Image (cartoon, rainbow, N blue to C red; front, side, top):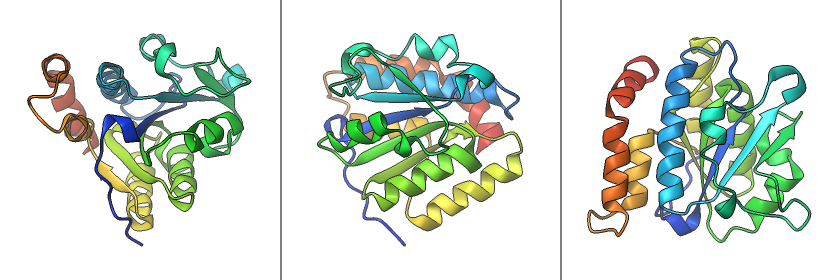
Length: 207
């Protein structure tokens, strides 16, 4: 199954941050840094961000470095959840969270970028649900991980086989930017430069 990839633009894209609590995940620190880079770029480009936490009472909440980067002003809203930025869940798929599904269905675009943990559980099940729902799914390989690296690689192949696109944070950011003359280009270039050493390290261990 191969989905036709749509042009990626800020106005047809949503970012999903999945369950980024600090746990014993392989190379979590690299995933955290790449998620930071993506959230900063997404905020600069005014791209909506949705985030979840898997059973936070037991597993903990989103790490502060990322929570601070989720801008409440551009998070998709539902009529009943106007003040929430992060949604707790017990389902493994983010798309099974009613507020997430409602917010996504309200979006004009169909590109969804996924980052977070764990690749073989929540990222995989979310990706498959989104693909089945008609969304174009982009999993950013340098910003997802699992406890066991072998599980991660198998899950990424399963997502690719189902029609998802496996890419990297920097590649995805530049697809969003599209043109060096973009009004936000200098800001984006600065973000990419800021995270250049971290990007190199993440790619070495995750890609």
